[in-house]
Image 1 (tube, helix red, strand yellow):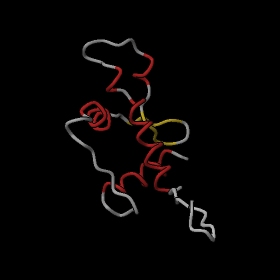
Image 2 (cartoon, helix red, strand yellow):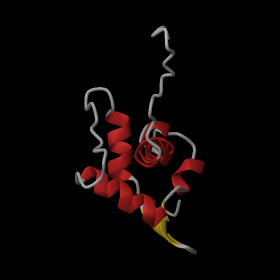
Image 3 (tube, helix red, strand yellow):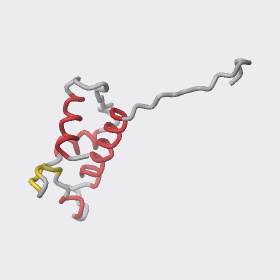
Image 4 (tube, helix red, strand yellow):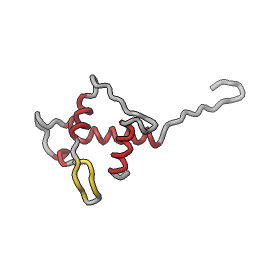
Amino acid sequence: MRYDEKYLLINQGFAGKQRLMPFFNCQNNDDLILAIQTAGVVRGRNGFCKDKGGEKLDETEENLLEHRTDGTDAFDTLYIGAEKFPYKEIYPVTSSGIL
């Protein structure tokens, strides 16, 4: 999925304009929330995209791995998958009523 499509879909989700609206447990997701808030954008050859330049740098106390774009990519994948490909549980029902 192109970055601009991801950006639009996820931002519409945060605005409540999609089927799913993401919420975060702030007490348990400090690192993910900070990574989302600080993720940069660069202009690439295909337009704007997430700045992943920091992923190659060594970890320091000021630049923790948890605050890089790897976690935001995982969130993007989870949200897009849940929004675009909802899981529908189908149980086969037999005539005996026993599953």
